[in-house]
Amino acid sequence: MRNLGEDHPLFKEQLKNQISTNKEILFLSMEQVVECGGGDVTLAAQDIQRAFELFGQGEIIQPPKTTLKVTTKGAEQGTGLVNFLPAYVNFDGDEIYSVKALGAMPSNVQNGVPRATGLITLFDSKTKSPLCIMDAQVISATRTGAVSLLAAKKFVRPDVEEIGMVGAGVNMRTQLLGIKAAIPGLKKVRVHSRGESKYRFAIEMSERTGLEIIPVDTAKEAVSGLDMIVTCLPNVSQPVVMSDFVKSHGVTVFNIGCYECEDTLLKRMDRVVADIWEQGKHRGAQTHAIAVKNGVINENMVEDLAPVLTGKKPGRLTKDENIFFCPTGLGFEDAVVAWRVYNRAKKLGLGTKLDLWKTPKWI
Image 1 (tube, one colour):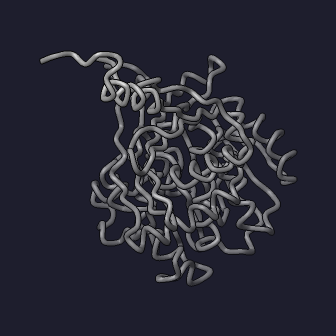
Image 2 (cartoon, helix red, strand yellow):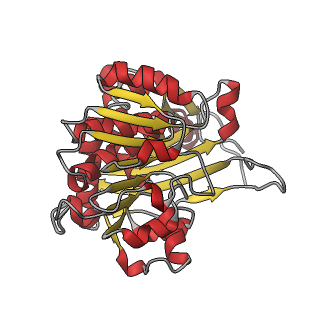
């Protein structure tokens, strides 16, 4: 076959097409994500409320979370893990294709590195090519607190003035911000962690929230006699809140991490709520999934959050009701918050434009 000469019209057209198809993506650093509202728990709650409504309308595709974890024999803390959370959201006409890849390693904190770091990638809805990559740690923690804000409005008694917290990491900070926004009368917090983080948490979060925050030495001290309990710990495999630590009636327990509360506690619960039970069941690492596996409760007892947030099912019915909330964390939550951040960044002219290619032809 004869090669086309450089003066050939078809050659010139091909060259023009190659030059015009450079692909730019926008990169947003952690600081830029914060500047664009990625750390605002209240705004994230608005995004996620709408997303749960859309989920109920069939406008979201939510594949299961995938965890990459290599265990080392004899290792006390394991070797960390990387989670992958994809999602598709038809967000009121905007088609969002998103995936979060978040790595977590508990020992990072000792070395001055965040326990969890990663990236969220947004894809162009037409070409399915990358559109934006951004820091994931801010949005991941913020949307976790935002879900608890929404759940607390439905499940926690509005007259609660004191809560107990077990864990004092980044996610617990966003938990407190979300719960404070949901419970205006909140005044006091007891907090426990194994290390020194409870003291930093007490000082820094009391300044930020205006709440009285008291560090305590044990998980039992943190939760005993209280109407609301929050646990949020890094990848624990044994419970730290035992059933007999928890009062008999009128308690709300938020189990944010993995197996943090003794599974027999769920025998005393009137309601057990997941964000999406099928996701929690697939993951199999959290308290409600372990309670079902061990035969403590029947899985028919576990209900999803969406019908409650959309008004199809009621929230708390009585003062004495016991409610256990255990979210897995969903990719569509990351997606809708990241989409708002991306659009805000474009409006403000923030971010760094990177060439994915100058021309798609490489071979």
